[in-house]
Image (cartoon, rainbow, N blue to C red):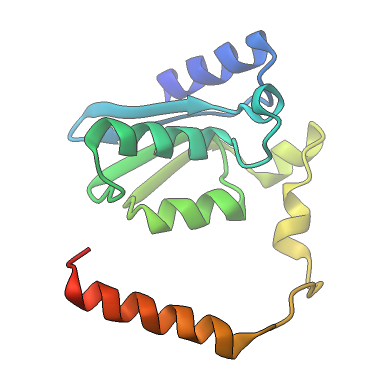
Length: 143
């Protein structure tokens, strides 16, 4: 967690974004690190966890982070939790919780509490055709 805190401090001191730092550890060794770079990159997906996942995947040459642990300065938002699960990270340790981030002006709570449905199914049949093409190619090539 100490290194995650250092990442957060480096990011806020450089003006990259919020106080969110993260490291990913495998077998006691840091394989990925990152901090919030939303402001720096003008990209709302550049959360500390996302940057650390990208760094870890690049460093090990795989999208699969099975056997890893993630340390982050704040409870991951739903986007980051999704990425953490997709990466197969087995354990998450966080410092501050959603109420703490709310108190300093971040709106994470809305993503946990909102029941607004703003999505709608469209052109399903055409999309299913692309899925079928993927399946056919996948059977020819082993991804």
